[in-house]
Image 1 (cartoon, rainbow, N blue to C red):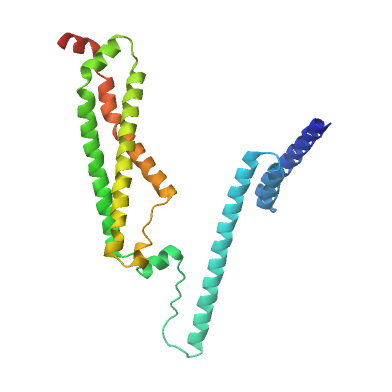
Image 2 (image 1 turned 120 degrees about the horizontal axis):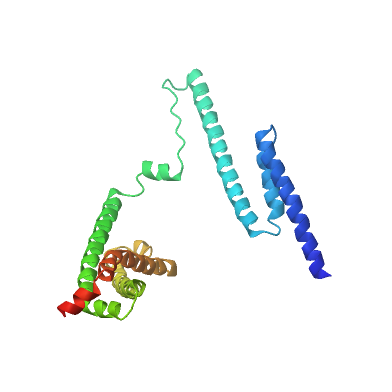
Length: 246
């Protein structure tokens, strides 16, 4: 009985939700509140279907964005009219200069983030690119030194897929080791922050679980991506040439 009730409930929600959803699509073309009807259809379908919940969340997010933009526009118009009225009343004689900034624009206008931080970011990205280029060269030399081994394995029937799998796993292990070493050096560096800065500032520098996970993920993904070209070169080793030369 319970199973039949659940089946009937799911069937009823599906039929009603799809009908309302299609009605909303029709109302988009014809005059009418089409988007509201579509949202209602998704709300009904979200009682049973996960995909409807995801689309409903997107619709809600879009609606909040539109509402925020409309509120900002209305407030800007209010400030503009207020400034013009104050100018006409003679309180000041310059043209109205209304500026309504969001958080990012305000931070940039107030110079909350100093230029030194941007320079440090560019320097860090430069070192990151240099490390990736160096990693490509080292992995290429490491893999090509094993050309004889690769040739023998290919001659014995190993497909190139296995060569890719082995070398990319090795590259991932190298990236993991580099990420762990980088975290240890970072922890040692953070111990010295308290010696250079005030305690209030030193407390801002800390490591949390999300930062550790992100560091390890970036290290592994970057190393694996850097290993694609060396792995491709290693997988193209000709077995006959290697067996003949060795």
